[in-house]
Length: 149
Image (cartoon, rainbow, N blue to C red; front, side, top):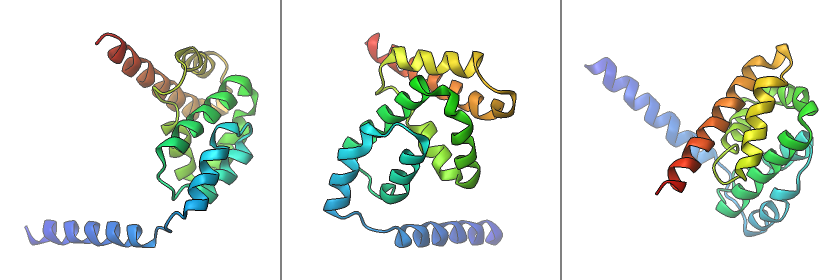
């Protein structure tokens, strides 16, 4: 029992430490992330914005980032190897991208992402494509659930 308590306390302290190290988001950073979030059209520009503003928890920017992720995946699928390179260096960026394939997107874009992931994936990117397909299917289910209510 004391071992479980020690593990629990270690996790709590680590979590608090990570939160304490998180940089606060200034009003200027929040505004900048909102203004650019939906206009990023390459993985490199998206990654740069992510690195600058990931610490800003901003709902308006989140929808914009989802739109940018969708536009790159739908309109520039052939650049997926670059996403793979960036996400191998930064797992959190992978989570960020996957988290923005969501039900706020136009469902025709989500269906295109799912199709690309299933039919137009390089063998070396199989795991990334599988994750993109799962996220797209989850967004489609969520949208269908909302539409049926």
